[in-house]
Length: 473
Image (cartoon, rainbow, N blue to C red; front, side, top):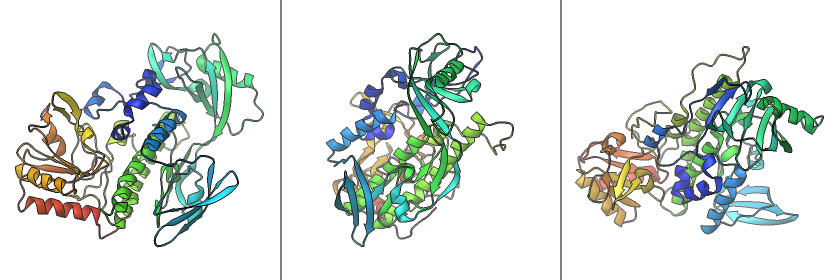
């Protein structure tokens, strides 16, 4: 939601999903009528406001994607449905794609291709990129059904329930079909009454209406592509990695990966960066994606494990640590130290290069905003209230177009409500933090510059945008 906030559709998503999807509880129960309920800790707890200005939302894909499409069209995108990629050819100066639209083939010439064509990814197959990981984990059936049941449990709004009586889960909705997910590998051999009986068993009584809408087979899977880049083609979304739904990380990872790649493509295509910057997409995202797959697998065992399952080596990390605490290491980050940790607690941010730039509450002209609201279009320099040399250097590079903006935190423009900026960003009041377009810290200085501040800042930008060494995972 933070990333959608940056592209101007956060409020639109809230309006299309409604209040019911902005909060809720996840439960483990024998059935929905049993008084013995275990409620899980959820990532939208009240102290989450310390981490982000945005609010957690559950949004179905068929609701989200039209919102994304509308915004993309506003920004000039040419979206073509009923269109299949048939051939893909690369050359020194670009890519030629042959596409088919209801029998008619045409060619598209582009500088780069982002293959976000799903778990089976024909583009990945054309490129000969293999995948590795645990593979297919189970065979499941999703049963969509209409009902007059209330989407609550013991007075709490319910997001999902793991139901032991049916060895499955139930996902309620306020205005759309509910979902029953159970083991099964095909829809043949079942009739509606069998599914209705399963639903009644999961609910624990039969005093409600139920109508089967659709039955969809699917397979929880865990894979990561062995490469994310092949020449001028990049894998994204499920084409790059896929994981079981335990934790709900898959959609987040796809959005985060696309956001990581987008600013780098923009920088290269505008001539501000070398093509080698694009190698950092794989270097940064692949370790994070693999780490997130591991977290989803840990949850799969701890939530649905049985006595014969292998014992997990450790407990899963908190959800917010996985979603907000991941860190990048590549030539697009000017690291200060060799810290191998992939995740950090976002409630105790380090502000170190490679970490997400922390949320700090600010006011401007009496209106409250977040540091997060300052990012998303280009490189931004944040300086402390005593960082006069850094601020002056940032203004010079803003005037030349090297930076999108320079902001002094705690100065006349932006008031630091809680006095938290310097500690959150790991610098002194005389320090500075350079933040990338995707909201990750690229470089920082703890205090006053030792030499020419403008030259130091310009060199940092050059090293990030024109890397000489390709870093791979």
